[in-house]
Image 1 (spheres, helix red, strand yellow):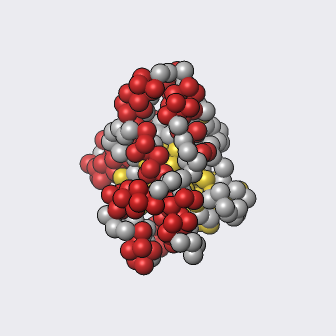
Image 2 (tube, rainbow, N blue to C red):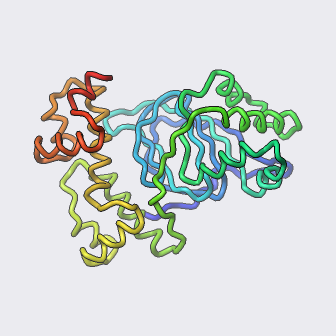
Length: 280
């Protein structure tokens, strides 16, 4: 599956950015990118968020900023179907970059530079959330532009965590882009089953050795390490949201050995599955 170039809404004449709400009964896998910056706030819903090579949980209150052309998707858990509501703000580099030359905009410039790998804002304050929800932002007016700049300014004072690793490379060639996203889609769809390097390589018509080199070059990780990260993330959600035993969770997440699951979990989370569950 190729990462699709997404055009969600068309800006009208005179609009410098887009503010809109998205309401869906289920967030389905849609691996895509677009040339605009994107700020997404989850008002309702939970599931998984994929940004570049990042695979993390999202829930109500989640706020992220994505730089241009960074592939991403939001999906609800396969065992859940819940209504999801999000506020999305998209703005182009062509609009914002001329403003970044002013010294007062330096903090915003630095934040946007970091967003090339995606930024997750930790516990955004109510003042910022209130600004995000202002429907005035959907109007083409001096007031909406002022609110938008104030919103960006507020974001610069919030602690952030990067999402996609610096090793993730956004491929520019259409053929390579189509190849890697076909593999990502295969992994996401079947990561709780016994995935095969041979099958993944055959999807993009490469030998197994050539595939391993290609995947490591693009993702910065080996195929097995990437798959294990998705499985551990899924296991974490089962640990916090179900009463399944550790063994049941290991097998439900795609591991065929409890010993191996415990070893991988400890390496990835620096604690045992039991400790993770007790912490939550």
